[in-house]
Length: 309
Picture 1 (cartoon, rainbow, N blue to C red):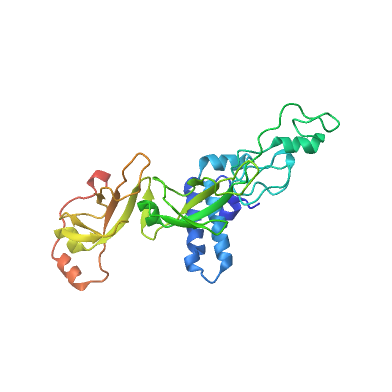
Picture 2: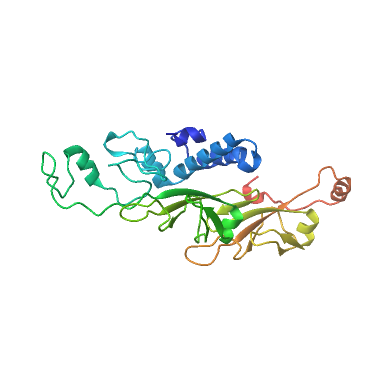
């Protein structure tokens, strides 16, 4: 089983920022949209995403470090069993534990193998293990992974997913969805004597070229011209819901942050976060007219006085 630290190329002492930086770099290099003719890159992208799912979650990272889960995020096998860990898409075999997230693991099967009899009977050299056998187990859960665009996640756009039986269903993303969010599809797992298992969908939210998520808010660096910053202007700004007009106050400096209310991610508590727009004055290079204009004007202020320099 792959070590998520090795997969991301970081040490076990790596900080959250180092882990996020390593993931973003690899995800950008290996993204399927950039490697359409390279299936191995898609496989590596999936491995990198799984590794980040674990190491970006403090609880999962601690569980992995303690050996409680493997590199896939599945519980480590008990009793020293080396059968490859829990799998979301199959049973582990007669007498074993069922797949990902199944609450109905039947210990009676284990005891039958050890002592030669079921829990409620009198067969075997020990006359059974005592007590009645539990209810028949449900079928195994089936694990699915769903990659969602940044904009779809922010706006909770419906997502279509293909199930193991070939059927397709439309999913409504939950409020506050983020990478690692799981959705349970009741009765969409494998059939079993005690009923059908569930489908477990783990979501990955893709990065965006110019939006960055900050909790429920979205940050955007917006280039503006010197004219727009000095004189003020109404300019078009992209949002996850489509472009809107934003009024830039006259005399705006680089770094000034403006807020577009309700243009962020949905929140579990209701409503949506905001989009925080940081103005970035973009000056032309080697513009003779601008150089000449400024040669006749000097800003008399001591703008660094508060810094003591």
